[in-house]
Image (cartoon, rainbow, N blue to C red; front, side):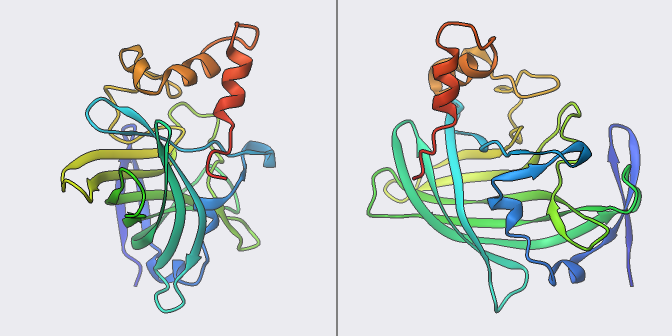
Length: 244
């Protein structure tokens, strides 16, 4: 039996239906590892790297999922391998993403396309032999769509809309050495629970108060015209594949 739940978005009631049984039969690893995504009118673009922060000072936090492999013994779990970066400290990690809930929207703006989301938990362990490492724990939500051929993909169909976001991860990082925890959130195109940091309306705009905590290069790269001195170099730095 499918149960319908109503969600509220921008004052509009959106009905959803349970999809947890069906999502088990899909491999959704590309939601987290795809290099390219399709936006409006089937145009394909490079997917931006996640934006993130760690700690009360909103220090810029980088994370990249190198691989995601579906657990053959648990259809709702994926093994994750990747790297993190804070300032110039790069660490490897491995762990799991576990799906707890999946739903599809009963109505969409796109004929012949089913849109929905998965929610769940994650636990990532950095290599304890490396410097400044710990464990990440928290919850996430990722949006997907299924086309008329039955193929599941990263949902960027509303990419041009104000406030667009996907792959929202919210939780904490706990130091192996001290046992102390810090808030650590990240996401694609926006960051969850980042109201003090993110002063943008339609898109992410870092608060200049936190420029010295890793956001200065981002500002120079994306908040100025390409002809601004230093902007071209800043954009190249933003696109560096630091995890390789």
